[in-house]
Length: 435
Figure 1 (cartoon, rainbow, N blue to C red):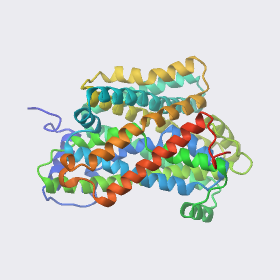
Figure 2 (cartoon, one colour; figure 1 turned 180 degrees about the vertical axis):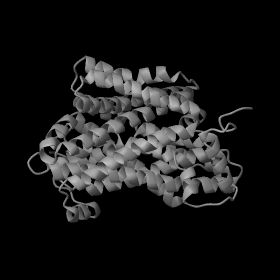
Figure 3 (cartoon, rainbow, N blue to C red; figure 1 turned 120 degrees about the vertical axis):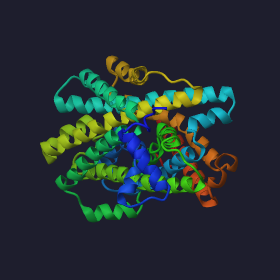
């Protein structure tokens, strides 16, 4: 049978090399790169345009004070993404497929409906972010930026036909662009590094308004589609012969999660640092991406402003690609239906075109999308923790007591903070959370 793996393709060569390492072949830095890919793709969810908006607001409004929150949120994300990857490696099924097997049909259809709405809400933020960046960078109408972003996103999605490796390389390159842009920003912005170090390690909360924003940073960290997607990216990436190989693959996966999400965490911290250095003194009220760009030019120069837009464009395009991949996986897993990628792309980006056509404020649309995600988040999180702790599903790879406790605590924390965000959004006053 002539499969992608059998042919002399990039994916085929990578698969052969991975099999050799798992069978006891030579190891080293190069062998680590063979296993890189799934966590790199999932990490895009932590660098999407929604993160840009939240981090800019945190840095502009409260300086470096909330850097420790970004660090804590990233540690929680590492745990949950590692569990998702392990689920796919151990069971050979993704989270949506397991939900279909384990729950009743009405529950499955409800979960699928909620997850599809979440996928569209996710793509709304990602697609709008990329379009805004392109419109500002090239002086285009927003609708033109959306059309170009849609075309580029679809073109990248076609790489998936050639196996997993080409797509992983493309997404990895875009992650590299985002990272390099913010590394350069650190040399341009007048950063107070002693303050950065102190606020990264020492928790502080300068007022109720900061508490709300901290809840937003943590509560919106773990994205529903990233949890679904990571399990699917690892489920059939490589055939596993025995428990020893499975254990080895989990170790490589955990290492990749740590590296990939550390990079994502550093990028998020760099966003806060840049916003603090540029806006905290004199421009604390900046909350919108377009305003941040326009203000950066006179403060730090055209180079810094351009780097900001290039990183946002790379984030919008890559996260939109990943969001479409996740949406396809969610549909196929829950109801066993796979539709053409162009139709999937059309469905998930349609709300963004409607929002722009109706003249809705883009920032307000992003806020609404985050509220939708807050409603949807419990579905994959609770299912993930439930499945990975069950020995009848995971066997000897079920969560140990400490991992189980940490996963449950992280889930409860994020769900509580999402509840706070929802109550705040609907105008419910909470003690200690007033601005």
